[in-house]
Length: 329
Image 1 (cartoon, one colour):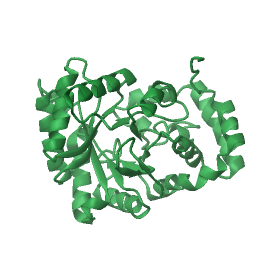
Image 2: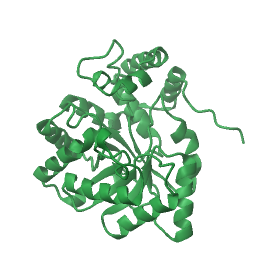
Image 3: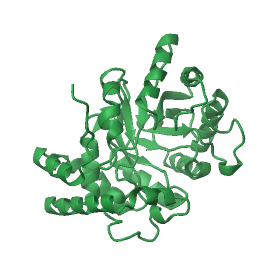
């Protein structure tokens, strides 16, 4: 397994990591989660991603049970949580969502309990909170680090401007600013990583924990002929995913990539994940899997990297045609 430093920090994350969104509690049970996390760890994965809102807290509870049973050396892996939406769903009351000091602190304590750990390695603001003073957010995260409850804090799906504002506040008050962002990045969703964040990478430094490198499975090719039973596009409450990705123009691009992958003698998933982690600004790409075979296939993406030479990358570009157009200097 290859490891990369997370932005301008000393923390090293495995280039491929393992996440629980959608799958934990909704698609798999403790036994399968135990098997998959074990396979990931044995292959060098050292980052396990989670959030308060995943399965309304049940995802973190499941991961916590697995980690307790595994009894791995706590210094050998990193675990995260994210706060914003709360875990009570429609029962959320005021102060049980958002990025107020009250919610961030209480959500952190709840995550520690569910994950059965003394501290979080990474703690994310899961979305920007337009109603909250950025000073309150930065101060709260700084204090949680000072208290030893979290080691690094970051953002998820924030804009470049919002991240820079957090750094401005941190610099103004001598606080610890955000170290990482969790954006979506894949062959069909590229603007933030290849355009909006470019100046951040060059200046303040930014680690990235990529979610959905396979566009929720679309780039694995499994939806080329419809929606398989049990897949996430068919799950209750995930119609928005289906509406986002199941479009003729996107499916046409994926089928074109499938032809190229076949010529290279690799799977669509291997091609798509390898393309994602080839970007040097990607710290880690989060894998989601419900089956052993699926996870093992995805982990092979590291071995595929040498095949993605300049010619192949140009072929990929010719098929997807999604590269952001940057302003001329």
